Picture (spheres, rainbow, N blue to C red):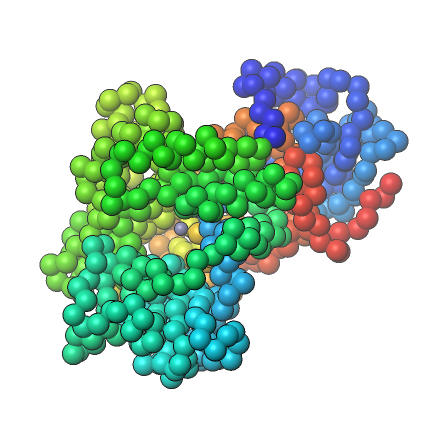
Length: 571
Ligand SMILES: [Zn+2]
């Protein structure tokens, strides 16, 4: 169960904390005490402490070691952390644990950083499985292929006699071989589907790369996953989340089988995060589907599972020229990219979803996608005066700067992927050539958004990129590659400092998920969602933040991950 404190109680506890040095009112012993630690609370009333005490899944004490005497009883587990850091559990406000976890169980290309590695892994996978079975997987990085467009001829040479299907790490492209295309009946005569593209060679024949909805032409043939596949995928994703300190997340996109996996995991007591699930909205349909989404929400809501979000894909990605821009792609004159949903339909969907109490969760990459979604939120606000739920926009890559202040004005959460904000091969080879030099400086304006007063949160988009919040926090602070300690920072004015980056991944996420009375800071009365790190992040150079390790992750006082190097209790 999520045990949510009524706001008035939370306020009283905070007041008690402020006036008494955070001692519990009741004379009851703690279940667990973390002492001799660097506690960074993300609570402005009481920002730093040495010790935290937990009872019945709640934080009952935040203060100095010397004040612990009143809460340590004969059965209290006491962990001496020897100067290690304690933080609130991390919030990942956009992540795909189920599909990412399923991918981990398939032919995963995520570890590959070069074409040679992609080739080696695919060749190896082709030696496994039944003779006629699909060779399937995902996670290849687009930049290892020229123009982000892998060719079927290469895949034919690696997998000549079985159908093969791989999604790119961002999920917006697929690489298929000739066998797969033949089974799907995709030929030079096949037109591009709505909101999709079949990349073609000079003769017009399918070249082997499918974008966006064109992926479905082949993926529709893949054997369906079972409920057990979904649950196993979720559990792989959850294990990774626990290892990197995530205690709350927003599932980015769930159709019913994905939602069911969360509900099953919760019922089995195996869910190790608070999960806000964003239900998939079918953009080919209109507002009438909101009745079905409401049914799903009512049927599967339980325990740690809150299916209260609805996901809308406004556009695609700049690298594949599928993001919707206000001005044409530099390398494709006259072409603006497409919105997946017309402004009129977006308006009616937002109206219906907001009225039904859904938090709308919008994928928006291009400046036109961002503006169109903001316009829809503005129209809804004009109707109801902002009485509806808090909505969230994610990715937020390319801005017209005029749209930045609108997030605060409309009460819309800006959720970024800070790990993407540096000059990598995507930026150099695929993004800048499409946007040109001026627009390229209008990407990921995290610092500007924070200054605007908007609620800002962060997420990984795993399995698109690493789930580790510490790596994303490092890049948010440095705007350099993880292994780059000295190079120039990319768009340095949009860097944020460490306290701000930590807030994005804790309290910012809690506000985005309407959990801030329960999580997001180490505050007496809140749930004991806590992380112990190997190092004090403030005591090491910013370029080493990502190397700190999570040693302990707790959800409501329950240990969901514990590193073997963390010492056993002293008593
Ligand atoms: Zn995503």
